[in-house]
Length: 156
Image (cartoon, rainbow, N blue to C red):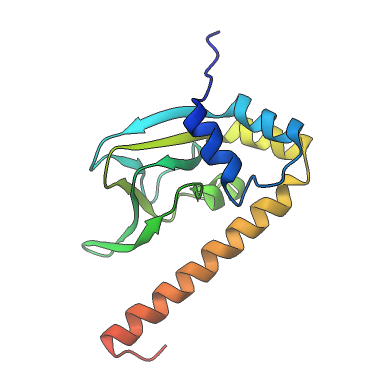
């Protein structure tokens, strides 16, 4: 079996991310062993709203838009380097709630559902990181909703 070794850029971006900052060395190395680097071109869909989750992606470089479709694509914001894409769906098993679209040449580290699940079972301290990342995502979604509503003059 061919082993996928993330590039130095990918490892560096992951290490600097809020999700991984301060993780014990062994836990971080476990993440790096599971992660597979992938590249996307502008317009490529990394995940699609409604699809069954295959894993979580961490942005290494590039620009990615979060979108939902309500008859037309609505941009919910961009993903910052080091942020997870599809984490909520991966841990819940529910379909992806957004579509993530590469806006530029993009690199991600992909963590398949099975590998991510094994890491979470082996290293329960990662659940704290998952909780913080999901909480941040909820807060960002709320702020975006507030901005959209105030722009449209709607009452929340």
